[in-house]
Amino acid sequence: METLSQTPVTFNDSAIQEIIRLMNVEGFDATKKLRVGVKGGGCSGMTYVLDFDEVKASDQIFELDRFSFIMDKSHGIYLQGMEVNWEGGLNSRGFTFKNPNASSTCGCGTSFAV
Image (cartoon, one colour):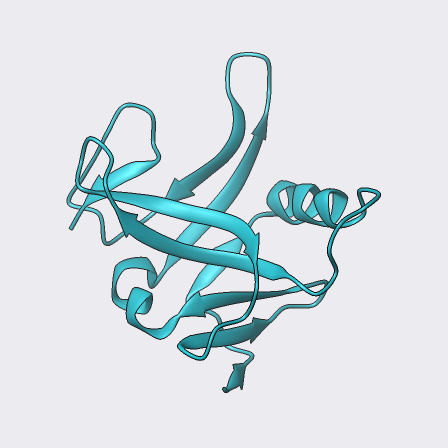
């Protein structure tokens, strides 16, 4: 398994702060890493994955200043250049994704097509 420092995905400051907050919650399983990826489904064909998971043999590990994340090697073509943001407002709350590879997205922002 390789560890890389140049990441295909970036995180804005508020997303980094929220990820660090989640990692510091009491009872967090520190053996897991943040997984960034995609899976089939959703109203546009593919859905983003952002969760804490165990490292698998097919993963690459990407090191950032304050945490590392994992991504299946095959997902890079869908996520290259994507930015993960955290929205903390009253009208919109949660992680959002700006993906330059998406040919279309759904209204909820968590599903896309390539």
